[in-house]
Length: 385
Image 1: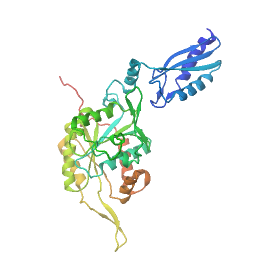
Image 2: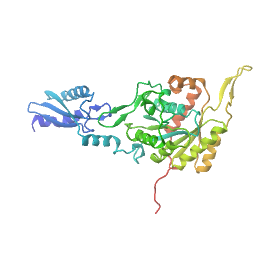
Image 3: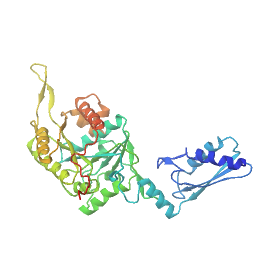
Image 4: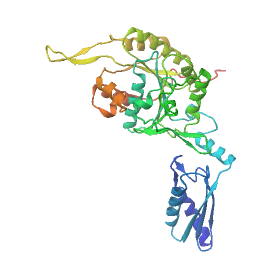
């Protein structure tokens, strides 16, 4: 065996350590290495296929490939030649990254990502604030978390996370794939980051909204996630129905406040999700109580500003209606800091991790992370015949 032939396998092994920083996989796995040529004096020439000729990563790829190949004993020189993928090759790469063209990776039977949709019957109950803080708590505990803001008309996730108006998702040229924004250890996608300005109104009819939501699931390069949290719009409209059809085995948390006006509509949201074959894993009661120091005795008292027992009532009602246990997962107290941190774009669980509200949400994250999936309430798509 000649020296040039002996070097071929080590070169391939070395190239497998070079990662595409956008796609998060080795260039060899992505079939970006078109050819490897080694001449009689052990000069190595690597032809790399890029998704587009104007790829801004050319210099980075050249530097990293040169470094790893030159570290191989016997290599005398390295040349990196840049080429461009044809349409067929780009389509194959897209299919590789998404597990199949236009498929929803989280809906596949072999998906290891837990999809948890956060739903409510009405607005103003703190659903988005809970979703953002719960996602941050899970990420802070070491999990890989994606956060999808599916509230197309009333999106608030970018502001709650403090994402600047000029920062948005990027498109991988030639691939029609979108990279989500990364902040606080989360991968985030929201229509609010794709508009020319945050104050621009989204005036879309239902079918257009449904198509956009579908693209968030098929065209966004989420990568390998432990959790995907979805902030649903309030109520039982088109978006919630569309998600039920696209992700029938998603799990759902219903958010409410204690008062009757919120609990009645929250129960309807939970019932609708169950009708779409989604598993209701629990109820969260937000703004449950206010802890205040009494001016007379200087002791701290619990004040039920919006009443009490609403979350427990919904949990019991859904348990009876769905024939499996729907627990009350958490009661989150009403806090000024919780609201203030949301206004400044720093989630409460990160800004004041030891506050009562943050402690409850962190405990909820630990409970969710420790749970194993239960088939009760899930549709198995089995034919008894």
